[in-house]
Image (tube, rainbow, N blue to C red; front, side, top):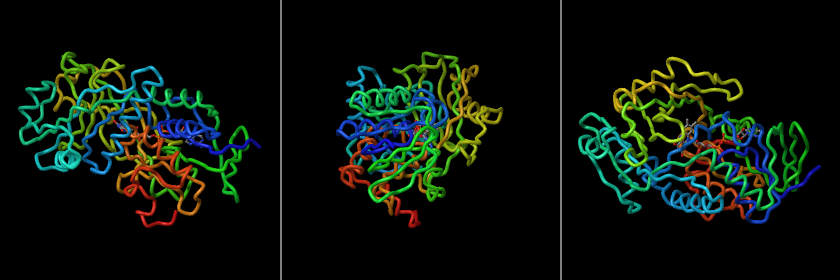
Length: 378
Ligand SMILES: Cc1cc2nc3c(=O)[nH]c(=O)nc-3n(C[C@H](O)[C@H](O)[C@H](O)COP(=O)(O)OP(=O)(O)OC[C@H]3O[C@@H](n4cnc5c(N)ncnc54)[C@H](O)[C@@H]3O)c2cc1C
C-alpha cells in the first residue's frame, strides 16, 4: 500500500490549489482525480470565472480576496502565463437592493475604491449596459476574471515541480479513518495517508455522506451570444457584472476565448441533481432564460448563439463556504459548498487547506465557514 503525508481527493479548482500549497511546504502529497485534468464534468470549466473585491455576499470575504489576488499573481509569475484579466466589475440591483448595498458596505468597511452610478451614468460610461431607471450600479476597478482551466493546470504543474504525485482517471471509491490517518480504495489502488483533504466539488457528499444536506449539487447553464456590436464587449469597454433584476440574479463577461458575450443565471432553473445522473444536454428553456435577459439588458449582445454548456454549483444552506476540519475526524480537512462563487478563492483555499492539514487551524479567519454553524451532526 502506498503511503503519503496527505491525499487530496479531486484535482479541480480547489484540489489543485491544495495540492500545490501542501507540496510547497514539503509534504509527500498525492492528488487523485476521477476525470481528466482539467475536464468539463465539474464546476470549474467554461474558460473564465469572475473575481472581484467588492463582495456583496459578506464583507468578511474581502481579506481572503486580497490574499487570493496576491496568490494568483504569484502563480502567474510561477507559470509565466496570464491567468487574471482586470476589466473592473459592476454590481447592480434596484437602488437600495441587497447587491448594491452589500457591495457598497464591503467597499466602505475595507476602504476599496469604488463609484456608484445610476443607470444613465452607467450606460454613458459603458454603452453595452441598458439598465432601467431605478437601478443602481457599483463600479470597482479591481474586478475581472480568471482563466479557470488554465489556473488548474498552473497549480498542478507547480505542484508537480514541488514533488507532488498526481493521478488523473482514477476514482476514489471509499476511505476510512484509522488510528494514525486514513486508508483509501480507488478503482486502481489502495493508499494510506496521515491526512485527507476532500475537494470533491459536486461529489463531496458521495465521499462524506453526512454532508448531503450541506453541499447540494445544482445544474447550471452558461451561454455565449455573438455581440451585434463587438466593440462594446471588449476587455477595455466591458466590466464583468453581477446583477439582480426581476428575472433573477445574473452574471456576465466581455468576449474572451470564445467569440461571444458570456452570461449565466445564478441557480439557473433551480434543479437539484445527482452529478452522476445530471442532464448534460442544453435545451430551449435553458437558452431562453439567458437570451431573454441578454435581449432586455444587453441588446447589442443578443446575436446568434455561439456556445452553450452545463456546469454544477454545490450549494450550502446559507451559500457561504465550508472550510474546516471534519468535526469528529481531525485528520480530514474539507473544502466544500462553494455555492456558485468559489473559484476566485481557489488560490487562498489551497493555502487554508495546507494550514489546516499542518496545524489544525489557519492564519485566515474562518469563522464564517465552520461546519458547526449548521448545528448538525456531520
Ligand atoms: C456556471 C458556473 C459559473 C460560475 N461562475 C463563477 C464566477 O464567476 N466566479 C467564481 O468565483 N465562482 C464561480 N463559480 C463557482 C466556482 O466555479 C466553483 O465554486 C469552483 O469551481 C468549485 O471548485 P471545486 O474544486 O469545488 O470543484 P471542481 O473544480 O469541480 O473539482 C472537484 C473535483 O473532484 C473530482 N472528484 C469528485 N469525486 C471524486 C472521486 N470520487 N475521486 C476522484 N476525484 C473526484 C471531480 O471530478 C472534480 O474534478 C461558477 C460555477 C459554475 C458552475
